[in-house]
Image (tube, rainbow over all chains, first blue to last red; front, side, top):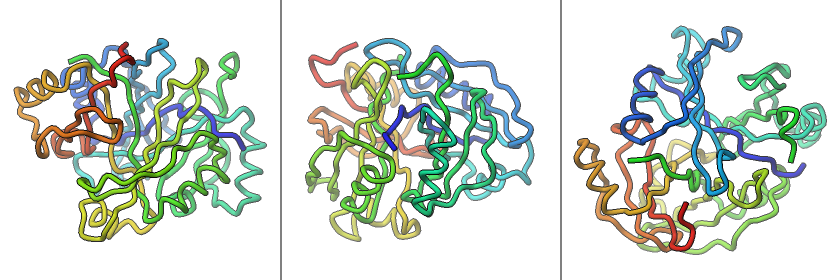
Length: 146
Length: 146
């Protein structure tokens, strides 16, 4: 495959409201979406734009708050009470081709391909096969191709 | 302050050579710099460009290999044998103004301002004051202002 755009950095937090205040008041972020629930994944998320020289093409920060303690992100936070860096998400032009390529390389895929926070198909790869990083692969939204 | 460009994501690895092979052969990265040592920080680093729609303005991945086990990154890897996400680095136009702003907010700064891997002044902020994320603040290289 060819390396795609680094769409976002997933950051887990015990409180999405407190994290929004941090990114707005301490870091000076101005473009922060309204949080919304992804009940199938047990999380509430929102996105923060980071600026670039060319405009709004920057990697986003995805804030992720678990909807309950007994969810994957809830468990992840048990030993990280302040939150922290949770995953990286790279774009691909075609999710099925990418899935086949990672499978052919013997990389463990975590569950089925599903619809992610941006409304396009995604899947996750096991961190032990990906240099210690939980890696999300996401199909580029239509009309935003490179 | 105003949120600056997400310059890079720091990724620690036990082997920068193995990580370069991973990003090249598995992830399909094509722009990877030659690794170089930063002896003062006890690390060897290189940078991987990620693409954007507009060209080469993407957030970079900084691979970081400790030069010895008894360095900060060496110790960080003790419980993370596969490596993982180590820090985030945001740009600011003026490092001294940014340092003063974080100090005024009571954020703990880790050591003196020093010259980072891009040749401009940097400092690090304590993860417990930054939503669990070791955060690097870096002055934008001259000629690359926004």
